[in-house]
Length: 100
Image 1 (tube, rainbow, N blue to C red):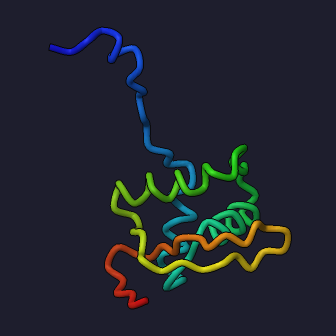
Image 2: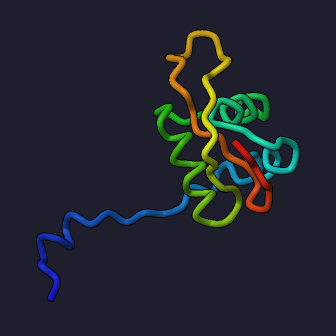
Image 3: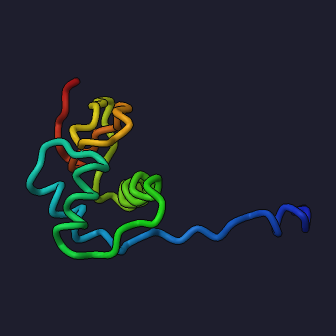
């Protein structure tokens, strides 16, 4: 039996499909990409940026759950000036073979 308090806490999660076109572009043109690349492509296309920078990783995880891309075991520091320089997870096409 499900507790009613648990139902109130459960969050409805809907996939973020706003940036699928950009993610498909990245998977078709780059072997590896990260959230920095996603942000740059969104900016170049003139699309609305995410309000919270952490949302870019959520967008990629959402795309991965729908089979558009996949997370690799490769991490790379950001090349963007002014970033916190924390290594970021690299993503690739679902069928791409990536060796660290």
